[in-house]
Length: 465
Image 1: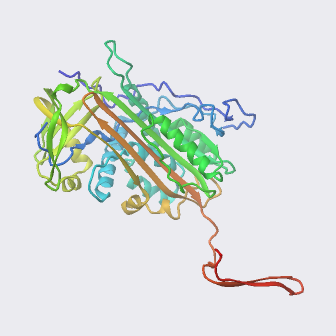
Image 2: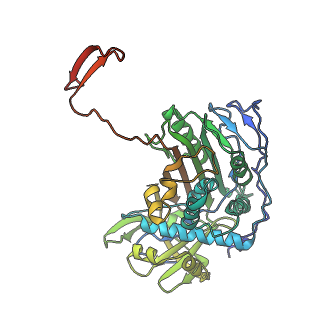
Image 3: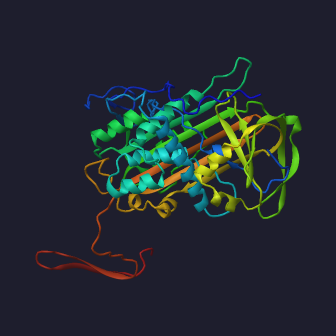
């Protein structure tokens, strides 16, 4: 028997990494004087959909992101992280269920075949930090598309979930069992010369344990390397090059990042001696031989009519991977028919049942640019003419692009997964009245603007010669 899972909405956990807010710190980690106040067939039609791909929140990493090594400054609110938020169980449930609706909608819009892993946890937290500075219709669109549940204070609710799920971490067991690791980190990277509102700094500190890490985006490749290195470190090197070349330039004002790392052993591992090559039937009917794991035992299983479901608990019983096996071969149609409510109904059918499970070993990465998908889902303003006046009084800010990368590996011992999201915010350049591009042969002359005397006259027919 698997130990029963703790109450998933237990909000009484504490955050071992929460830190009080500070003021200014330099790259050596010393205080700066500039202070501020303030169950299953052997042949599968397609890889089973993982309900738990929204790996739960873990407590936001509040350690100094520089680690004392990188050359940047940190601007932080004096307010401490709120470790006892007042979110209700009903509010938490609304936000959690909204996350299921959001990720199913997004997955249905990502065209193409092949493996795909998304982390609504990472995406919604990264954008929640943007949402904290959004006003008017921009905020309305974001709340609707990201399914923040219509709660009064989504930041407080996300903080409550974060703190509660931090308790899912387990140290190495007395008999050598692998630890359960569930780490989540947030960072806001702000341009060195750009002023951000004090109340926005307070929101980051109180709800996300984050400050503003000052970077010189004019040194674009150096800044990109710093942010990518931060992500790599916090995902155990599983997410690399989150920000691609060319994503950062001098007009970037901020980059908001979230990193999520998960690693856990199964409550009861698969025996490696039982892993054999078996045929896996793809969605197009073709077959491929893959190493397939086997185990038998009492597991949560349910038959929901259009699919069957089985859950594989991880050590401790609080976390699990739910596998959904649709009756037909068309996984895309099955995904498009799902809603968050339906997903939780399927989970509600799970009952302890003697089951024989066969599951292929798998490992893959996914990478996605989110802008076009989120605009199509109904939030174009934040990417075009955003109102982010809650972030800075200067205005003219918009989200240029959002990058999302994930990794997952499943084997006989357990699961390792990681996700990261980066939201790049830029300021509008001057809107030109005309565009003048010398992209064909042209004349030029150099003149004295007082007398009109032409000093030189030339023509350019091939700039490369």
